[in-house]
Length: 312
Picture 1: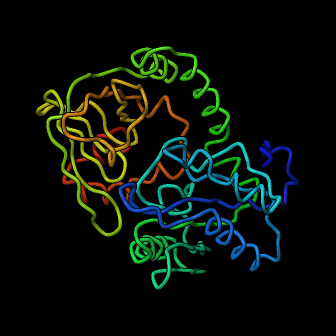
Picture 2 (picture 1 turned 90 degrees about the horizontal axis):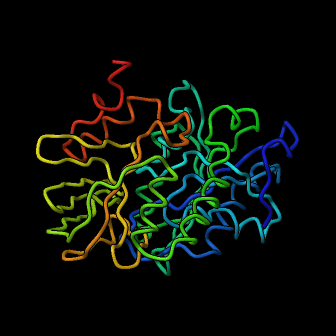
């Protein structure tokens, strides 16, 4: 696999976003073969004219999105992401395309086993196709491989989180240099200009699968973390401490390893830390207030006012 800067590609090259879509708690129903096949479905319709692959986000296993496809198909991975953090719905990672009237989204999705196997290529209005893909992930067992929205280099430069992949590599090196769990958490938080909020045992975890995505909450030391795949809010009583797209992160207190919302268990001792959205490398998809009303509907938490208070 090759990792390229955007400037290394011809200006007329098309960049394809690659992703896994579904619930973190779901069984693994997408294999490397599925991830390659999703890219092939798009390339077939573009007659091979794809110059680079880009991960949708920097979250969980997403940091390695594109590496397998690149190694097999010979298409380079680009040092960029739709967002420099994870997010629950595809339109948030569409780099502002949700605000462009008339944009036609092209998406391919592959996953599932035996009779639950799904292989889809779809074109249409962005939000409609994104909902279709989430539905397909549920039908396939919870997680599918996706390739979507080929875009020219010029658009990606202006609207993606450029340099997010190299930042993740640097952050990983900082993490690995630490000797203890506490040092790992502290070093990562400091590198991102974040703040460690608490460390303690988890009092309770509520998690349910809703429309193909994880929804729930975690209680720890008087704090409540709500999530919709990713953590959406952090509150202490009536005080809002962080609101998506602020980064709210949990890490195991014994090992220092990151633990996602789907992995946290009651009685587990974890660190909670936050990073303000202003310190994150975000793409243009996070600038559309309309996409955040869905978060309010799902979590029951007020979101838009906290995120867009200056614009509203």
